[in-house]
Image (spheres, rainbow, N blue to C red):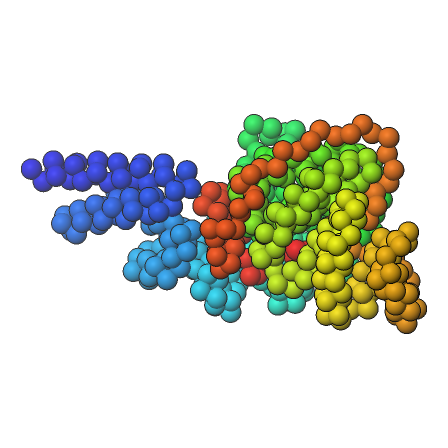
Length: 517
């Protein structure tokens, strides 16, 4: 009778474990958490009843279920529950899984805003790095969690020291192991972290070089393991591509930027759905820079195709809501260019941008409003609606009075002046004279700088003989994008994140503030 009961309980345990593992693989962490708890309860009840320890195989499964339960609790943002589970099951901190448990504790502390405790846990977890024992790989994983925190604390020497230990470990591996998937993934991750350190130290050239090398290794990795490419490495390279484009945009030639942008587009097509909110924001900002460069270079058809893709992501709620305003401003800008002029579509996208401006960070809302009003002014002028143009002009003057930055004021005036060169309206003529006096006082070179993350300008693009692009059919869902949502819901959590991206990147959201936004 006892053996039959024992057998039944083991079957129940394995069934619950199988259900939990299936849900875990589908990123359904809430369901997985429930079934891991049930599995643990079944096997715990049996060991209590029989007063006997589990055999080696059941013990291993039980231990894996406990670790998976903690991961689920962290993934569902139940950090306090995760710490309680670790406390209630001391076996999680035995020699074999100590590093992994310390990493989980650190992630839980990060969710609770306890950075100092998290750093202490990770520093303890990295101790086996130099011991060359069985926990060395887990210690490397801990180092990859710790380095971003050290960068934010400006502890660059310690961060470099960890990277040096890892790279020495990789260089000591037998030659046969240097083409393995793990070797290439770890190298790429080291290069991405090195780039972040260099960027924090303002060494942009070395930061760019590290990212270029990482992307080169990824291409090698893709050829070697084309059918086995892990999602975590794709997401790493997505972030690396975006960061590289943002860095190159400051100091490189257009051709190289557009090449990196094409690589970014391909990765975003595959992975943008699974990326964290932060990764999506950075990738999409970089994407818009490339889109803008394409139409400035006269690649209008490519720009329109990329704009359609961006609008599709917006319609499916794949990109963060704060980026809706930006993409619509870029769309309106595109339809004010000579080779793709459609005033009706420009006004439509400006209306959508205006509806979604509240989702932008507050420090960007005024600049975005100025950009929208400038383009509306152009539209009303070209439609010969003088009264409406004057109304918009007066709104701009009110905003102009609130601009503190001389360079931003210079940019605004520089953009306004050409709009009224040929006007016979007395109000506008008088204002032009005032503008010219103001510009002389500012004594800054008049250059067409960008006022909103270098992606919201309305500079005239290069002339092109390309055929008119196809008309974009704006998704109607965007027209009422924020009518049913309050401002405090502006940045909603995406429930479809991958396990790697959600657990690893989301937990480090605050720690990643050194990233280019």
